[in-house]
Each structure stands twice: as structure tokens, then as C-alpha cells.
Image (cartoon, rainbow, N blue to C red; front, side, top):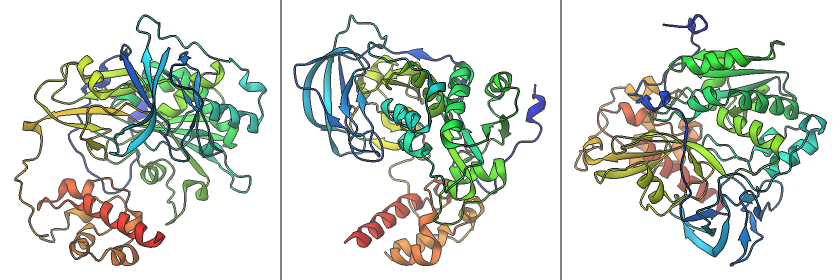
Length: 446
């Protein structure tokens, strides 16, 4: 049955409708046990890495600060479990780089209750005190961008914000952790929105949720305050509905000028998971030590949404959910914009929204041939930024990367993957654009 508030779903132009595989959206959130060892990177966010403040052999409590923030655009790191610091040094990360990390040998008999906290009256805090308190939680964007939450909310006085947009689209196939948080942690979400409005000065909030999540919309609708400052609006189920540009256009009809941020048009965008954790952690005076993420894919026996301690090795996580021996490819995040990993020894971090496991049968054939562009125009029809992926792909093949940026607005591409998805010639357009951007950045700094 279609709910009455889903009659008119807001949307944007272009985009695609992939197979969504959202079956785990009906399953309640479950908690995973501690791994014997947790590997906690000191850099899990955009900005400067945290500075280690513990030593090898030191006992730490769950929730204790084990690395302090190094400046404003930095975040502290908290112990995800009670145990002993076993090692401090470089360890593999999902990006492929070796990263300074703290390894904790976990006391397996210990409970998952947070041992270190400092409850606070957030209503009594002014803006600066709130920003400091938010930074102390170690919270970064949990939708995958990993931008420090306090930095994003620290809006300059000369940049007034009139609307807080809360992103509950979750348009990536397979991912449903935002969905379950909206259903099960609605009060945390509303509390987090109130905090964000107070800090940013936004007088109103619009929550956008795709219309394939009617239970989430209903749960939020039932929890909305009577003053009308927070509303929820249904979005058409379409990819990439959750991108900043597209969700702002769908909800507000505004476009972000090229090279500008949403604040330039009076808008601040935050992910529902981030705000729900803000509403949970800040009043309790706790640091982020775990997160909800989706584990799914054809090669997973027990797919679902799990509360996973930060630092949990991927190998342990997959063992717990019964990853089949047929699993040949593991993706962190969603299949459209996620990252394929080459090692199961990398840890779950704050920005890990999903772990997807695929068998060989579900993967493109390694021998799949790439053909020349046939100029069919399908990529132009789906690009949400109205770019010309076909022409940029032709330039990329000739290594004319500067021309891609100067003449075809390469920098406006946010690598959603729509063009690659529809290309009948199987041209890896997104990969080409990533390489072009990287080379242009290297030239600009050399």
C-alpha cells in the first residue's frame, strides 16, 4: 500500500535505475562480537591524522581517547574495546596505503558497554562549546565522505544557512544501514538534527528519503516536532539521488554554482547516519567506537545490518556473516562508488558504510572486450551533471587530460558511475576520469 505522503516523489533529471537488492532493509540491526584484535587507524577522516597518546602494553578502556586531535580539522580516536595496546605502527588500509595504527588485543570477556563517558546538558552549551563537544566525539561523515562533523557544522557568520538538508536517500544498491537507522533510531536522528540546527543556525530542516523506504518515512513522520521546523519529503528511487547536488535540487529546486559548496546557496547537507550518531553520542559524552553498516552480496550467507566495532578486521567480519568460499571480490561501500579491496586484513573504519561480497558468477567477465565509442549518447542521457562523458572518454584515450578539465568541466564529475553503467561498449569511463583528475592535480602541485 502506498502511503499518502508518497504521492509526489521529488527527483532530479537524468540518472539510472539499477537493480537495488535492498532485501536487508527489512532485517533489524544486529550486533557483532569483538574480534580478538582491533586495528585502529589514526586517520579515518579528511584532515590531519590524530596523534597517538597511549603506549605499547598500556591497558585501555572502551571509549577512552587513544589518539588526540591535531588541530581543528582533525578528530580524536577512541578505543573501540577494552584491552591492551599490543602494537603501534603502520598497518594496511583499504586505500592500499600503509597507515599509522594502534592494535588492541581485546579482553574477550568484557562487555560492549562504553566504559568512558561524560554526560552533558547540550541545551546549556553555546555554539563554540557545542562544536568542541562534537569534535570530542570523533564523529566524521558516516555516509562515506568522512568530513569531520564539527568542521562541516562550523558555518561562518557571513554564510547564513536557511535549510539543513538531511540525506536519507541511500540510493546505492545493496546498502540499507541508513534505512534501518531511520526506522530503529528515529529519536536519535531528530535529536541530532536539533543539535545541527542549533550549531549551524539553520531555521528549518528537510529530510529526503527515497520512496522505496515507506517504513522509514512513516517512522520519521511520527517523530516530527509539532512546530513544523523539521519536515520529511519522499524522493523518487533513482541513482544517484543521494549526491549533494541532486538531493538539493530534488528537495529545494536549487543548483550549486560550479566550484561552490552548498553553503553558497544557503544549504547544509548531512547524512542521516551521521546525525543519528550525533544525537546519540553528544548527550552521553561518548566517542564513536562502533557503527552500523550493511554486509550483503550473493556470497554472504547471513546478510544484514550489523553494529561493528571500529577496527574490526574484514576477515573476522566476513567469517561472522558466513562469507562463502566462492567470494572473489569484496567491495567497501556500494557497488557504484565503492572501493574494491585486495586484502582481508584491513579494518572497518568510521567511513565504512557497507561490505559487499560477490562470487565469480556475479562479476563482469575478465575477458569482457572494450569496444570503441559508438556515439550512442546513452552516457549523456544519464549524467546528472549534464556533462559529455563520451567526449571526455575520447580525450582521455588520447591523454588530453587538461582539455577534459578546461573544455568539458571534468572537475564537476563526482564519479557516480552512471556513464560506465549504461555504456554498451564497456568503456571504463569513471576510471578514466579518476586518472585524469589525479594527473591534473599532480601537474597543478608540481
